[in-house]
Length: 420
Image 1: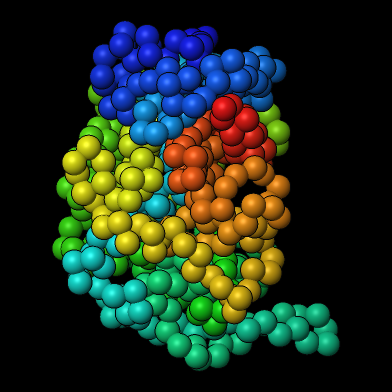
Image 2: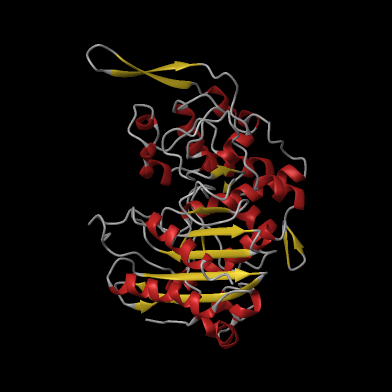
C-alpha cells in the first residue's frame, strides 16, 4: 500500500514526474493556504482503516485551496486482484461526473449563439418532439396500464441541463413508466442514433419543467452537442476543454498504454455480495455518452473544478465566461419544480446546470457553504467546489455500491474540518 502524508504533499509533487500527477494544480503546503496538515491527515487514516477492513479497494483524494494542491493521498490497491498499489495518477471511470463536463460543452455552444437554453430539444433531435407523458392507471383488478397524454410544452435544453425534462432511468424506480425505458445493456450497446431512438420510444415520466428527476437527460444533451458542433462529444471536449485545461488523462476510454493505471473494483461488492456492474472503459464506446462514459484522474478533474471556481478560466485558458459559470452554479429549480420522491441533492440543495447547488447554511446533513456545488458518480467518484472557502475536493474510489453515499459525506466532513 502506498501512503502519502499530508505534510509531504509538496515533496510528493516535486518527486513525482508531471504525468504521475496528471497535471493537477501547483502544490502548496497546507498551512500556506489555510489548511491544517494534522487535521488533513485524518483523511488518510480513515481511508486506510476502510481499506484494511475490506470495505473499499483503495482511493485517491485531492484537496486544493486557493488554486493549489495542498493534500494528495493514495491508499489501498489500484487492482485488488494483483494488489498493485493505488497511485495518485490512477485513472477512474467517472460515471456521472461526466455530466458537468457535458454541461460545460453545452454552455460553450450557448455562449457562441449556436443554441439557446429555451430551444426545444426537438430542434436538434426531431424524434424527441414526438414524446408524450405516460400516466399510470390501475383498474379494479389491480392491473396498471400506461396511458399517453400530450406534453403541455416540449422539453428544452435547460430542462436537460437541470433534470426537469421528464426523462428517467430504467433503474431509477419500479413504476410501469420506468420499466418502459431501455435497460442498461441496451443503452451501452447503442450507437448515438440508436440511443435517441430508444429514448424517443419511451414515455415521459411527467410534464417537462414540473419535476426534478435524475435521468438520461445529459446523455441526450451530449447528442445535442454532437449535432450542433458536427463532431463527437469526445472530440469537442478534447478541443474545447480537456486540451486547454491540460487534462491529459481524461477521455471516453482508456487506451492500452494507460490501462495499467486503471483503478479496478472488487470481484464482489462487500456490501451486497454481487459482482459490480460497470461499463467496460478499455475500448471506445459506440456512443460517447455525456451522462456517464468518461474516465479521468483526480488531478485532471481538479483542474476542471478549479476552472469553474475561477469563473471559467485556468492558467490563461478561458473556457467559459464568468457570468455563464455564475448562471450555471445558481439554483434553476425554484418553488414551482417538484422535488418529491428520490431527490438526490437532498435538503438544502437546489440544482443548477450540471451540478447540485447549496442554497442555505442549514437543512443539509453535511457541512458546507451557500453557493457550493458538487456532483458524483455511481462508481464511487465525487467532487465539490466551495467558492466561499476557495476549496476544491476530488475523491476517487471504485465503489459501485450503495455505500458510496457514505463515503461522499465522509470525505466532505473530513476535508472541511481541516480548514483553519
